[in-house]
Length: 444
Ligand SMILES: [Zn+2]
Image 1 (cartoon, rainbow, N blue to C red):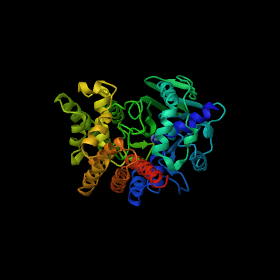
Image 2 (image 1 turned 180 degrees about the vertical axis):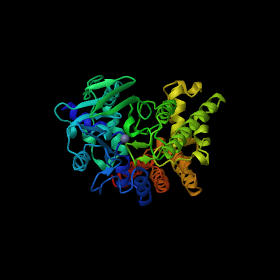
Image 3 (image 1 turned 60 degrees about the horizontal axis):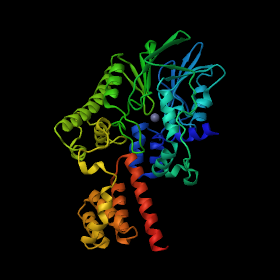
Image 4 (image 1 turned 30 degrees about the vertical axis):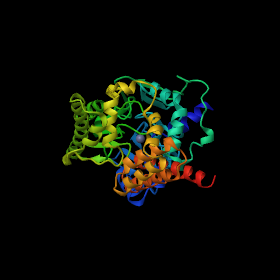
């Protein structure tokens, strides 16, 4: 049963972002997210598979499942979420119901691995990169923590009930199921039905990430290393470092192949060598720009918050922030390189700055006075400052109605203005949490 709970947890990562956006967000964000990932609300109404060429077919969803047909059997690249798999299988098998010889997993997020059992047949080989082993163990090792984060960010899914949160009593470091039958380090080549497949290690969104190259069709399957948005180089639910220079190297590896067809696991395929080169180059350069500006600022002695506020993409590299945020990526790069210490000796100790607030609030005239400051900040549009003021007041007096109301109002205003699906998930959590605290104060 452990394997089962693992699967529902790993499927939670950021895999539901668009799905959840549809449940949580305002209309324009739904439209933007849908357009970002795929027109037609992520394949929900898809009645037949997309024919990319004479041998490659795709079912869309969060994420896509792609099938390569050969005379001796088929190859499935990514299997989508477990909930999408039956629909994807029906659509793709309507095109060709040959045996499934191989399943290739671009990486071990649940929106890519969820449908493995739906597709797997007697003798099907499942291919993943060597780092898959640590990646699935890492997701399993921290499943209690991820449960909490996912319950906050993706409440509408009800996939994790708070009552189900695991109260850890021990640590399971290496207990994950290892599903793949073939693992490789740098490159794995095979042939089926006269079609050659080159499977390449291309770390980026995850360190177990791979890409697939089919020379015959000049087709590159790039998994989650390409989106029509700045990538989620740091994800708020928490993740091990996603290294900017890994993305850059991996994209360069794909560019060198000069693909005619580029197939990401979210969103539409791109057809045409020149367009692919243009879009991949811009994507790579946007990542490199943010990385280099961050490193430059670090070497110039700037702190992380200054750089988060300061760095933005120039217009020719502006690939949008519907999915990843530049500011979180800046902080991710900074802290992945340097760790948590900010260089201020005050920060070395276990006493957090929050512990200083109650006495300061008292000096300022009490929580009510600080809550009024938060209200004034909301009034003048300084919503992030208002959140800090409200938090400071609440640290001194957790049930202060005025501070709770200010916190709620600031979150609501930020949510209404948000155009990023991950940010909106957490702002929604802030709204619910503040509302619940307020309700319990007003009618205990
Ligand atoms: Zn994905």
